[in-house]
Length: 361
Ligand code: F6R
Image (tube, rainbow, N blue to C red):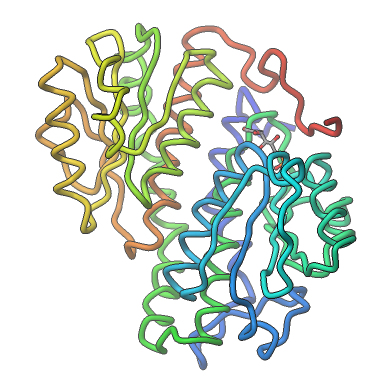
């Protein structure tokens, strides 16, 4: 049942305020400015012994894991990174007993992720799952973990599950941080930020008409460039994937800092750029990148916390705590991909060549 929406993608994008509310519910502990994640199966002493975190997933879940790795580094100061599960399992990885492995999956059935988990367990590693579908293969195989509580996601293209997965990682990062060196004040700051998310998501979704008009402005593009730095980069990658999947417009994502090392050669009016420009300590660097693009007559659509003069258009999103900004900045670009695809008459819920869960190698 699409509940009045024309597609599941639209329904699922629209559900995100409620979905985020669900992943937060019952987990926040104001007394200790932390969160409780019931199924982690990792006590405080074990959590203190973790030296490194390796996050494994595919596609959108991998991108959510990249943001998750940044959140863990920022809040818990544990070295963390994300890698596509398929790459990991085929490179005979060094499995280290002090590393905590985290498998991320909406369906919980993605074969490459499952196989990576099985290989890790065979080598004696501890693996947590960050999974949406309760009781799925990856959830069962993992030593513990947390459910993402996005609810059923029907559209092949993942939207609300991406957002909820990132929020779940924020909870995990906060939990680990408060066991280690994150202060009470910072814990409280992040909790307050998390609580603001549902309302801020509703505010972004309320701008759908504006985003639809912008999608029409850029619909003539043959190809689009997505750029961001650090917190903005995984957002750019995910937005680029969303656009490709549903509209079949070619898109690339680059760290803004890498533009001058090659991709700047592509910039011309027919290749517009979407720039993720959070109001953080990299704002000036992002402005400089936009200036370089303008100097090559590139068009720019910015997603930012304030109107960007260097950009042709800005989608202004509400500001949260710096660490949590990536959760919100991708949401307008889900709508952007959706409206671009809709205007092109694409089969939005079932893009060609794709399946909801990839249970083959
Ligand atoms: C993107 C998309 C895919 C999946 C990927 C992993 O919109 O749907 O990239 O994210 O196939 O799927 P899960 O998360 O089920 O493991």
